[in-house]
Each structure stands twice: as C-alpha cells, then as structure tokens.
Image 1 (cartoon, rainbow, N blue to C red):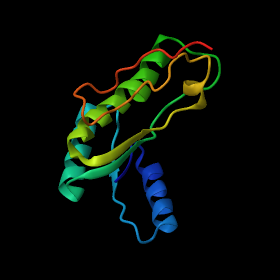
Image 2 (cartoon, rainbow, N blue to C red):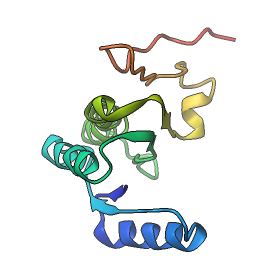
Image 3 (cartoon, rainbow, N blue to C red):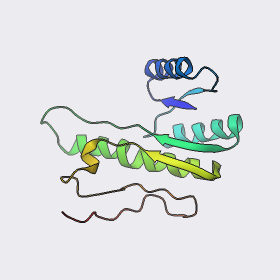
Image 4 (cartoon, one colour):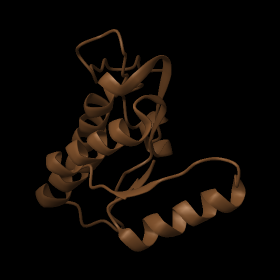
Length: 139
C-alpha cells in the first residue's frame, strides 16, 4: 500500500514503484497521517486488501524552509512528523505479522548532535505503548 496526502504525488510514486518492481503488488490510497479518520480508513483498507502487514515504512514528514519558524510551524511539524507517525504505527500495529518490521524514516537532523534524541519513535509489536523515547547520551 502506497499512501500520500497528495493524490498526484502519490500516484506518481506508485507508478515509479510499479516500474521498478513490476512483479510486486502495489495499491495506492490517499492518506493524510495528520488526520485520524484518514489513517483509520487506511488501516481498514490495508486489512481488507492484504489482511496482514509485514513492513510499515513511515516516510512522511514536513520541514519549513528558511528561518521563519514560529509556534504555528512547530505545531504543524509535530502534527505530521511525530504525532502522525505515531498514529500510523498505532493504527497498523494490530495488522502486523509476528516478524513484521516498522521503519521510520527521518531527516539527518534527527540523528545529529543538535537533536539530542535517538530512536524517538521506537515501535514494538509486543508493547502496548508505542513511541516512548529517551534522550540520547550527549557526546
């Protein structure tokens, strides 16, 4: 299942995946991870189409360009990059097979010294609490 909140970009990504792996099965669905209803519809579609999930790759994220960054931009960034990713993990958790993997993609800043956090969104099938984070050790 390939998802994107932007229909045009999602269809383009789906087309590229189909061209790169023609023997694989891909389904496109519009999904906005900042919208709980959209994520619930996506989880229901995954369940009805595939029944189980072996890999969840969270690659959604936003970043504002330039130096204008205030409270509104922070709220929007956290809504997508943190809460949206967590929402998607929680919605898909019941659909994961026993050996499934969740891959959360982030910017390099998340791994850098300035961020101060490592593995901010660990997701475990065996844990009922998804997304617990601990500060990384300072180097």
